[in-house]
Structure formats: C-alpha cells, structure tokens
Length: 151
Image (cartoon, rainbow, N blue to C red; front, side, top):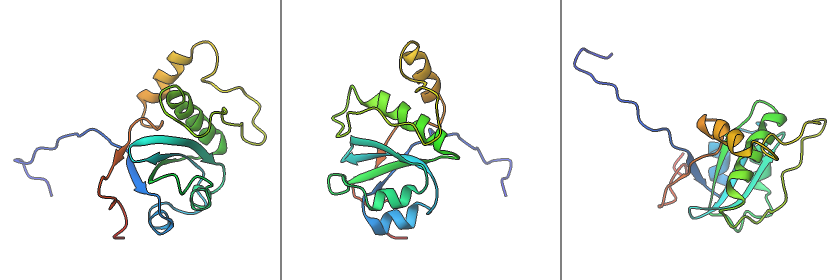
C-alpha cells in the first residue's frame, strides 16, 4: 500500500544482458517465442540475429555462442516484427560495431516488403524505431556475470 508520504520516481528503462550459458538462457528466456537478439563479447555487440519461431533454441545452438559472453533479446509477436527489430539493430550497429555478420538480415518466409530502414529516410526511420522501447537500443551488462544464474 502506498501512503501519502511515498514518492514514486520513474527511472530510465535499461536492457538486461544475460550470460551466454544454456542454463542461464533456459532460466530467463521462454521457449517457443520469436525474437531478436544481439550477441555481446563483454559490452561489445558482435552479432545481430533473430528467430522466427524459438529464440531460446536458436541461442542455445548458435554457431557464435562460444564467441559471446552475453546476449540481450527482445521478444516479438510475429516473425515480421522480429525482422523489423533485427533490421533496426543491424542498421544501427553495422557501421559502429565489429559484427561477425555483415550481410543484411533476410526477410521472413512469406514477407515481401522491403526493409523499412534501407534507402531514403533511414535516419528518420531509425529515429522513430529507437525512440520507442521496442528496438534494441541499450545494453546493461552485469560485469560479474550473475544476471540470472541464481534462478
């Protein structure tokens, strides 16, 4: 119960990075959820990707899992939304980070529209995408590696 003397303060929302360990991932990411992820080595993004069906399975079997120390992810309601988030993160990070994947994200099966971040208006589109909580825009890495391992 909140009494008259209690003050509520809004704090900046921050993204959480989980240790890239299958046991930690299974404790923190639900199975069967599509989503977008960024693999990190320390605080440095090294790979942007997505799963259109199960992000947990994709991360646990990822070919770059041994290169990553942490991962941050965003669940999606559809493969198209996962593609948009992946494209936003890729366009944001590809020029400033040393990404292992240099090819543009592929469209999901059955999706025919072009990437909303390619071509004219990229800065405007990225500004809109990153102004919302939906895009992968910030990373908070637990330096001790203890994000979820005690669950």
